[in-house]
Image (cartoon, rainbow, N blue to C red; front, top):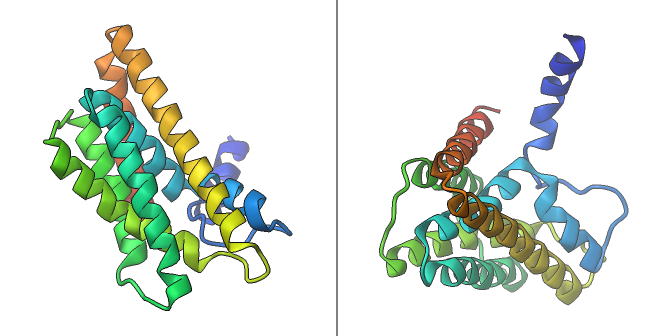
Length: 188
């Protein structure tokens, strides 16, 4: 009983990927950063899962949009451009993507791409602002873009695998779990 309580006590410190961890720089820092916080992890897996659930061209276009726009968002702080509501936007992305998956919403490609593009702008901006001053801009960017693409691919593989096994309810349950993570993150 004490171990689960202790684990729950640690969750707020693990919730956000927006803190420096150790002496990692450049490519490796960028590669590990997206998986170091529940907010980014849930959103990036959700993009892939929602793309698989939607099907068709969304399977590649939605994640590609996210990665491309996230790169743009990551460049904004380097150019001295600020973006409002970053943390709120990231939390909204987790909550809304989870709900879209749980309810199995299928939007037109232009609308789903636009929505994940907006979310990606906030996620990319957060990554860009947290790049260590001593790290290589290009190496860091390549690392976090690769990590994001890998997390999207995991979401896609899981979604397609569950569809092949006629387990849409598992995909919806995963979406509900992601949405609940969004609720949790907004409370901490």
